[in-house]
Amino acid sequence: MSRIIEGQIISTTHVDSHGERITRDEMIAMFSRRSPHRAMGNNHNLSKLPIARSFNDRLEELTDGELAWKVDVEVFDEQAYAQFGGVSIAFTRRHVRLGKTEPVAKLKLNTRQFDFEAAVDEVNRIVARRHVVEVVEKVEKADVVTVAIIAIASFIGLEIAGGFFKAIGASLFEAARKLRRKDSPAAPTEIHFHLHLQPERKIPMLLLAVDAECTVEDIRKLSETAVLAAVEQVVSLDQLERAVAIVRSGGTIELQYATNEAGEIVYRKSGDA
Image (tube, rainbow, N blue to C red):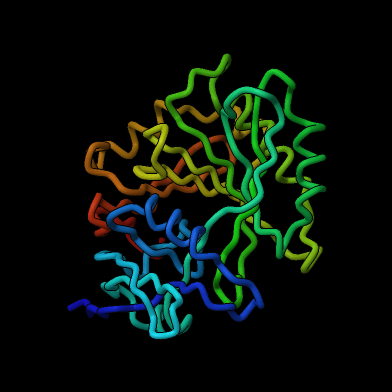
């Protein structure tokens, strides 16, 4: 039986443990773009099996005049939830667009772990000029982010010559692989593809976590059609919130889990996801 926690604070406009502050306007803007339900990843790692889901979001005025973002939380994994002592939000700040039209894809990284300007230079060097992309700063408000993840995000419905993975997807993967962590240069980095099924919304989303042994050629072998077909075997796309798969050497995929539009787990591969 899962446990419900009511009134969990996920962020406020106070100065936080990093010495930073989300302004009132930023908080209201983020709240207005929120999803009604969210499966919550383990320490901002959305490829891992969700440890909880949040719902019933609200903004409340605190007695000192600051704002608090509160949610109710259904806990799926008590042990993992207790390990991190609650939940935190993630959002984006700096956006550098390489090109003048709308971007076809975005590379997102945590600037506590990577040098933002170096990432912009690397993407600008590798990605062909005909593709407009953005490099985006991720802000993750967990006190300790244990895994470094670079996300490559795109609307999967975009028609890019040669296919997404054969063209811009492979190029951004190549750029991401060349980036080294500034917090711990020898530590590993995970690269995830976030493939959105609607152009103006983050969900539904297909997340592909790339195995460390994969090459750029393996990424070029991926097929958007095959990925969607694998998901549709376990959940209808019009009921999907998130589906997560691992990309293996050779460009094959292994579906790990899927959540529905209410943030509930509807498919889980046998064994640990």
